[in-house]
Length: 266
Image (cartoon, rainbow, N blue to C red; front, side, top):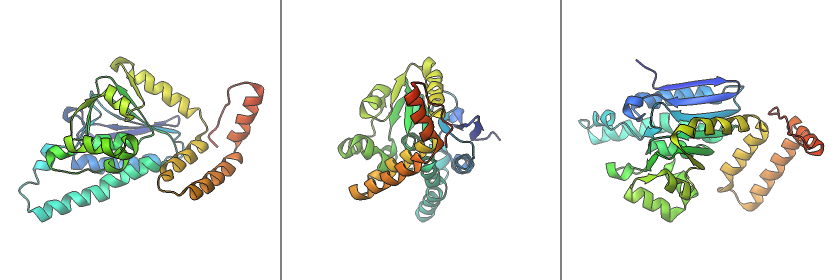
């Protein structure tokens, strides 16, 4: 049986690839387990400097695997409730939490369908680059469902509560240009340019101050839940810690010498 999720780390670049191209990389119960295990292994890798999340073939992820889920329809409602709740709590949620907290930049490479949990996965990343043939939708309401994977957390923070309500309640499809206008993705490029655009971005991030990137991610993740006073203290602590690194010294020396810094990530 083919692996539903592939992962590797080469020269500090981690790659997490959804691998069910014949099913538009839809999230099956098997993939939930594989994604949980792969993400756990990736975030513990000592050499990780940048992580890229993508889907094999022509699509990112078309949401949940409806055919897989339909096999539960003959079960009693209480059994279905427990099956899905347990799968989400034990397999899906940890993936999103890891991506949100891993101390390195995370980039989503998006082409084709990006729906349901696919949007959750993309929004858990720091940056998203999409091909102009990408199509987005929350999709959940069309199945009589609310949300999972943190989409109800991420989406209002990106587009605002009113727009998020529209995207959830109407579940309309929208294209990559609209996703760019809403701030859901950072860049839109032609399909044939997507790989090169992402690789250039990844190379730039991999050459950056890795330790500082991790602290930036933590500050941004916590900012909407913190008071101003608490955030100011967190910034001061992070600033002090980063000033004690070799990357800080290199940044200062490079600036004074009018050259590009050669960061080492520590």
